[in-house]
Image 1 (cartoon, one colour):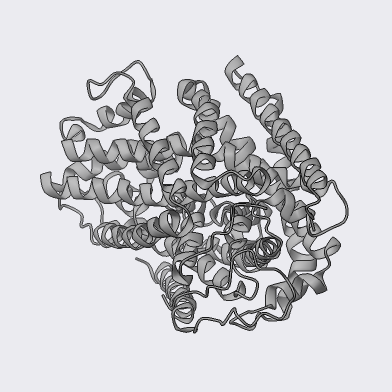
Image 2: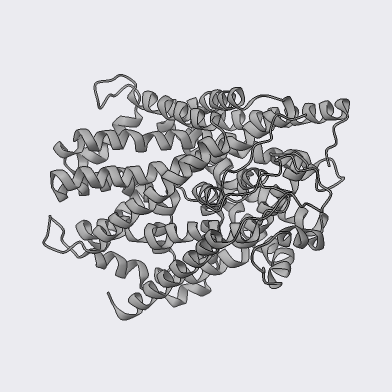
Length: 54
Length: 513
């Protein structure tokens, strides 16, 4: 590969992989919310169950 | 009271299902071709810019609209949009969110069934005895219904019906028991298959296994930037179009998935994660399979000729099965299963998302249980999809794809961004996006959503007008004209059903906002 193509390839791929991994890890590590305490006044048709950790 | 009280089983399942909704065959077959035709490596600059200015904002908007509608028990766009404004005509704009999903599923399930058939043919070794022309012709034979490639009559119909039954069965199993489970299995497998094929493609060496060039020659061609092209409007139009179609925005399926969130669940981080996962599959994997392998055997000029003749779909179905045969008896079977398996998972995770709004609508408005609603969707897809199967070679499949899979998405997205930013109001909208958010969305997105995204979508729409005019005025066989009339009739029919559902709500004293 020529140098400019290699730079474009690496920059684009590393950027996309890095950001994807960052946000997905954040999804995995963010604790579930407690939906029993709901103060917005909306009736929640989907019940009080919270997300599992995974 | 609606029977629809389902919810997602896990957050990872939701993100994978949303990413699966976005990841489709276009990630592997359309993106690399668009990049090659629009400046090579420099295409990534307008592409990622459009992702930030149009793709991500639309994801935020659709996720938060969906969750907002879900709070009031709405799981499809007619009444999600209706709940956001007092103007009653918006529910008819929301009809696009039912129409698009139903009509795209009608032809997409046929496309999906090709991948199942090609997995079967890869395993039984059908392609091993064919030369390049034979493999290319196989596709034509397969889609010509009265020609058989297995000995079974109407095999394309058989694979299509099997695929429809599979989709309907999974849909009938519900969100967490069906869709989420498939996403949790399908998405990791898709990525695994993609990584294996990408490694194989870029390590392809000239002189080995019949290759004439290194696979990296293809990467070199794909990523060599032509910076002059950045200032060409058509390149930006292509980049915006690619972002639009790769994220499955403007369809109504994201609204539907998000409507099953609870009131305080995050939408910002989820949207960000699912959106970037789609970019990973498209840029990192999609760019590293088809082009390097094709260039390895045909060179740059040969690859360009194949792309011009048959496009990305042609490379995927007419060319790659032949090239895999050069890798020996074992590796060719594995490569065929991995490639078409990857396309199958990309397809089924999208087609399941298309079924959910229809099922949700039937549950919400007519109190149907999930199972009959799912089978009703399967039946509707079968009836509407039949012309694309029977008249594939007359261009009905492409006609559906153009009007439903292209024009309809842009029209709906233009309306929904205007509704969200200007009628519902950006202040309320911004609050919706940030309610329960697990990340801090930069304030600049508030202004992007209000000003930049509507302009960009308008730019895409105006840019596509010459194509729409050419499509309308072109000469086509009667089957194509009939398919247009059918699609129009389906839209009108759905609008009438929505009007009936609205009157039913009023009669029953059920609120719509």
